[in-house]
Image 1: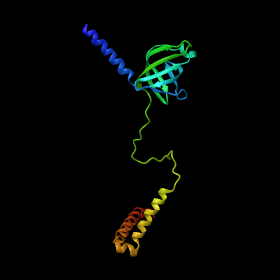
Image 2 (image 1 turned 30 degrees about the vertical axis):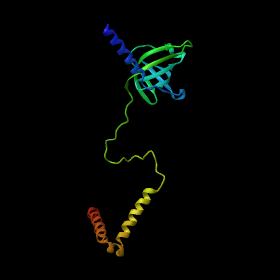
Image 3 (image 1 turned 180 degrees about the vertical axis):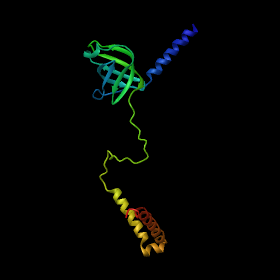
Image 4 (image 1 turned 90 degrees about the horizontal axis):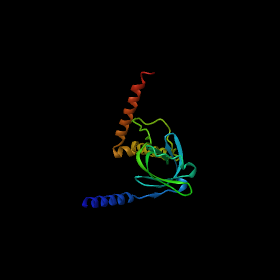
Length: 180
């Protein structure tokens, strides 16, 4: 007798835990989805979503096509999810309300670019301002000021800048002298 009391209290606790999930209501305009049962595609409206599943409504026209057979696929909000029906409620007006539990996500992930080289494709978002050009001009102006004979020699930077420019010039000259 003590074991049956223990089991029934465990069942009540399990039911309380399952109902404690937050169920987010979905607007009808945003809830358009499709359930695939085998090859059949049945349009549904997602009413609620939670961490463990969905509550959907099927119109009376398609309610007779529902078959409880294995897992289904729910295509909703650009995602494919394998679901399993939990319960079905047939309303007097012919519509059916279904609760489905998530089994696994079937959505294919976006491909991951594995190259270290910068991509040669253009970016989706085009930058319309000239801030990179302005920054490059500011850096070149700063280097030119530091290389001036009066300013650069007082600061001691003229020698280093001239050496760096000669190093780059000589490197380019050594590489290109074979072509001329």
